[in-house]
Length: 111
Length: 114
Image (tube, rainbow over all chains, first blue to last red; front, top):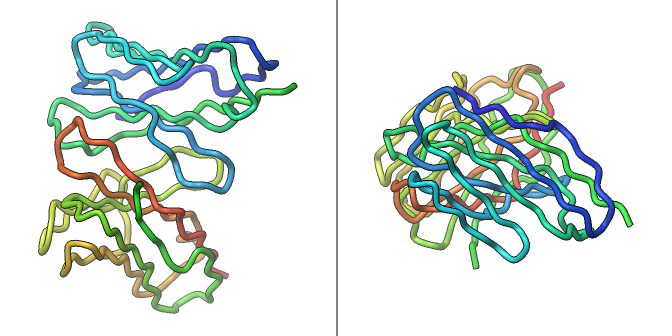
């Protein structure tokens, strides 16, 4: 029931864009995105609810395609502070907020 | 600002010892969670609680147990630690059990069983 994330790792230069994908084989209620820096706790970025809405957080935005059970995280004009591992967490149709986390995407931004 | 605390941050302990990992939050959140995370890997939910006197097992089987006697406190206990328990344990809380509620994570306890 764990979602699948791609790519597993990506290296960007400052100012470049990236897309991280999250796919589930199960019907989803919502998708959560978190970023975890090395040795630190995961930090919440945003929640996407079914309905395909797109949300934004500074230069980070995301979309949710409930028909395909997929979510994508878009990072534009990347900054050094964006480095970390990005996890999607999926809430199945129970809506209980018990998340299944993906394997993570390690993003490294270099000068 | 989220306030969720875990102690100890690091623990090295011998096989067979009993250990308790502490987790406290000052936000008055009803729902709390324990996750297990191996280095570089995904988080797995091992326990959760909807409130006082409520505890449930998560999707990953774990030999640990939890209790919820007070809203703010959600300790995790291993009766007899084994090397296979070596991992990072993350505690989290959310305001409600609803799907629109973000989870706030503590800094984690990195456990090594020798």
